[in-house]
Image (cartoon, rainbow, N blue to C red; front, top):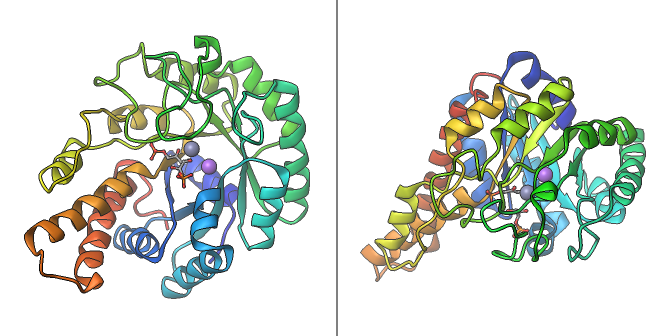
Length: 328
Ligand code: G3H
Ligand code: 13P
Ligand code: NA
Ligand code: ZN
């Protein structure tokens, strides 16, 4: 059944686990996410970015999710707008049948400049008021994702702000977070603790200097009843980098967010963990492998099916590691 983010995260909080939120752009990702959820008996959050909506089209995406629900009627599914950049994006997602929206007011609508606290509150409170009228959940964001290592926003993959940010801006302030939740009434809160989107998060295995689980704990201590969201939380497994590079790819050496760090976060209020890059790596690695080993093959199903299985393996790992398994 289609459920809201609030329903899923309330249950996760009562039972001390988190749900991975996987990005979906196409049928293969949907099938992988659902297969793994079925195998592990997990609740599902599927999220579509603005890019996904432009790529696949709203009709395709909303029918994909409905197909998922029809195929697996015993699994609760939330369909979430990832990184809505305006009230209008969030409203059109609701009209397309999404049960949850993220209003990301940490940046201006064009993504080029950080937005002030007041402007973030204003746009998020507006979305929150309207979404709640029709039973849709809302995620907000306070603080700015980016690298504590370089002190920059997210130039890397074209996401977010490409420029210098102070350490203060890159780490969510607990008092500001509390004020933000009070004023906006969001159901879930995305925070900045040193993670960023894409494969190139850290140049070494992150320690407390570049990934602040300490700050996460301080935010949770101040807001014990708020569902926290970790963005940029792919682990970028070494073996997936190697799978791609062994078959003609050129992924540069890099580190993601270790699963143990996410698990520590889950012990301190994290209930939604965003994962996109890891599925991209798994899908690409599996397809590259078929292309390299069977260059004469040209039936897309011959490489898409292994691609689905590779993504499902990652999804299954995360459902288990985040404690969602068994909670569908
Ligand atoms: O926000 C980040 C997600 O990984 C979605 O990426 O905007 O390229 O679809 P995208
Ligand atoms: P990754 O790039 O680490 O997978 O993060 C995805 C994300 O935060 C989507 O909102
Ligand atoms: Na989101
Ligand atoms: Zn994100």
